Image (cartoon, rainbow, N blue to C red; front, side, top):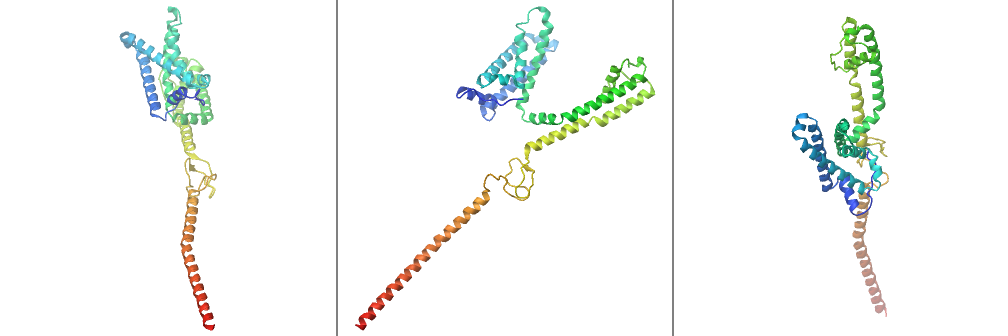
Length: 332
């Protein structure tokens, strides 16, 4: 939902980009917290302004607060676009569209002429509630939910299609069985009854009066209890799969072939083999260093013994030469 963004240049724009679009510094986290507080406060103002009693008593205050929030969010959007290398790319993204939708209604009120457009103005003011969607960008786990919805989309669509066929069939049956006086005046109305009954909501505005119609109602309600948990189970399974995919890697161990390791695991869970084949196992490097160190120590300890032995041999050679010289003098 948020494309890959880059700062427009070095210096001030890079610093603004790091504060607004990142959250790894204290200043960036503070900016996110302040922005969340402003969004919640603006949504609260919109909610309270929709209550007639509060609007009559504090309408002027709400108007001032709304213009203040709109001004701040407009300034924030302008700063976001200023620090980006490709601002149009951000405006086409999900959060860019939400940013525009959250501030445009208030500004459009200034250019909508005539009292006959008061209804349009009221609808535009309601659009400001979409500011709450901006909170999604502060929830890291939202990515897992979106990914789970994407993976389970086909199963959920198949389930909805099956439910639609069931309510159409039962709605048509109940339309043929029940009299119009009971409220089943058309097949679409009967399908509405089937949806309300299958979801076990039971408004009670339309109820069967014949024994066969009541039996069909019980059947539909029991079916609703049986199948209502299917999309929940599918979605839950995909959420768990997304969490596992985010946490575990599929890299196989070069030693035993085990392929379910945590993302940041360095050694195999089963055999303890070093997983990164592109780098050397630190344990092997440590063993090699210890072997080299032991060999160096052995050579260092062997060197003095060799020198001492050579010295003894030299002393023996000198003594032999001296003895031979003495013997020659005696003979002479």
